[in-house]
Amino acid sequence: MQAGTLISVDEYLNTSYSPDCDYVDGRILERNVGERDHSKLQIALGSYFYTRQKQWNIVAYTEQRVQVAPTRFRIPDVCVVLCPEPSDQILHEPPFLCIEILSKDDRAVDMAEKIDDYLNFGVKYVWVINPKTGKALIHTASGIHEAKDGVLTTQSPDITVSLGEI
Amino acid sequence: MPQSETLISLNEYLNTSYSPDCEYVDGRILERNWRERDHDRILHEPPFLCIEILSQEDRAIDMEEKIDDYRNFGVQHVWIVDPKTRKAYVYTASSIHRADDGFLTTQNPDITVSLPELYRSQE
Image 1 (cartoon, each protein chain N blue to C red):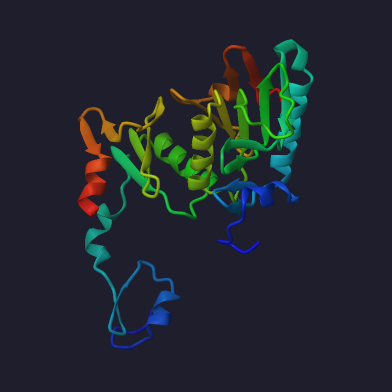
Image 2: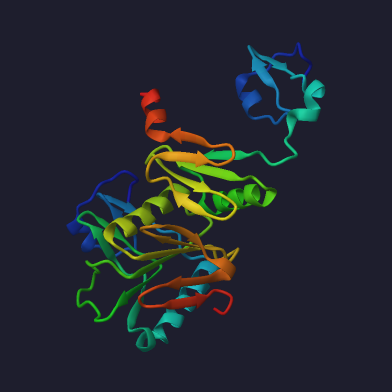
């Protein structure tokens, strides 16, 4: 895919990318995946949520397409929806939580735009985690908080994830 | 370091590291009078405010590390500004917030910068 080439939503939805790509207003945006730290934390978080799905009445996905706007699709590293589980293959309603695990090549401006996309779409919580340092930020519509001691939380439902434990 | 009178190409200047850095004027390398200013060339105490303006290529992890460096050093306020989206973030020792109202602020002293006003002045 040439940089700057615009494609339609329909073409994006009918094309397989490996790894899957974000789609933003006609542009295909590659995601920075494939690093070991990123991969390990992603599967650890996915497993952590998976084993607690009943307890928290949630469903967790990794690399799930989320249509955040008519011409914008994002693929959070991990996302969590509240039950009942949506029936569509692509999420058209805001997940409760989206998690982005930073890779060394993630650009700050792109990450900020992605977080804005989630929050503008109605995602309640966006966690951004640096797997190298273990630092994390919790973004909500009302502000940004640093995860003290690596503990990430949500409310309604109360979800707590200790990165140290993971 | 070439002699002051030696002329070099612009390309050579741009591909050479000078320590301390030098100015380039019409083929000449001009040393700057750092020796007279060595004592104040580098800040050894935390600035009150540091501002980072995001470039397209700035990596999130690098920026996070830089912000941590400032805060750990004792910088009280760090402003991160994205000139493309015109969004901004204010970091202090204890908090982070988005400057959604367009105002970048500090306390003690109270400094307020209106981003919309700043951008208007550039147009």
